Image (cartoon, rainbow, N blue to C red):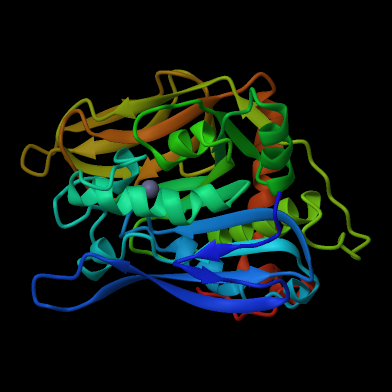
Amino acid sequence: MSDSFVIGGEVIPLRSRRLIELQLPPLYTHTPMTLPVHVIRGARDGPRLFVSAAIHGDELNGTEIIRRLLKQPSLRRLRGTLVAIPIVNVYGLIHHSRYLPDRRDLNRSFPGSETGSMAARVAHQFMTEIVHNCSHGIDLHTGAIHRSNLPQIRANLDDPETARLAKAFGVPVLLNSNIRDGSLRGAAADNGTRMLLYEAGEALRFDEVSIRAGVKGIVKVMRILEMLPPSRSRRKILHEPFIARSSTWVRAPVSGLFRKVCGLGSRVKRGDTLGLIDDPMSGEETEVIASAGGIVIGCSEIPLIHEGEALFHIARFEDIKGVAGQVESFQTGLTPDEVSVNIEQEEPPIV
Ligand SMILES: [Zn+2]
């Protein structure tokens, strides 16, 4: 492979750091729009990794993860190329919206086309300028609006190399999914670009644990790809993450005001009460019952719910006890209270 790297018509040499602005369709107010892309090239060529955030314009944890990633001092010793896109859906971000102005979901519009819908054109540009240039990718997401996710990696774990990267990321829960539904991940796989999808936290919110786990995870993946030198820390905690066998959503049996009695990371058994829904007029109370046992990896954060709405996402595992213990130590290890014992953490925590 040639060691040249061209993006937006610009040749980026080795040992350089650039901010490239790719031209996007302008707003109808005549306001120009660009897609800012950070490109960092090491002294030697190697893997080419893109890290993208806010492909859903209201999912913000990834944008903060990339801000912190770009400040990592170890990038001075980078091998290969890091391509970081902190806000992919710049249009959606302006409106606090998941979607593009044409009301399409960008992550259902890949690989896109040059002459298609607005979403298809943005997707096509992302494919040709970013994905075609990269050997690996990590796409950063959060739960949808009013939904929170336990930090988790979704990837095609049937591919041994992708599974190796997913395990290196260091979150306790992995979901195996091999989808082809217009997502960036599906289009990247067809291009031969190996990808992980990181899901953590809630839309329109910063969550410190999710952000820290994301920064650490990307750095660990870059180490295993030998883009960064190995950690000098002696504190090597290499837990084997757990792969979910399957997952299921528990939905609201009635409409009303919803209270959770268990949260993210909770270990639940089939038949357990997960929450309560009150009818504010009659005072009648209905229990939300677990339809399966497992670990809560996603849940609703808003008390106002209608019958049929998804309330809890439960993942099933072979070794439920093992995963519960690891989720607990993972969560406590990254909470802001632990900041004084964590020497790698230079950022003041968001609380
Ligand atoms: Zn998303």
